[in-house]
Image (spheres, rainbow, N blue to C red):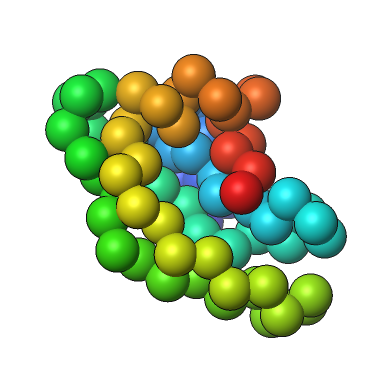
Length: 74
């Protein structure tokens, strides 16, 4: 299991974390299309700080551009 996880972390996965408390909410597996809308009308609730985010018009390129070391905070 750990071997699979280290192979996926090399750039194929973007972690989506809460900006307020840094809790991991979901992982997005990169498909390669930077311009298509990847996450549209998805609601995510943080279990720790109770924030609710509704993602609209998030493309894979935008997530790659704003991520730091494979971590995208919303």
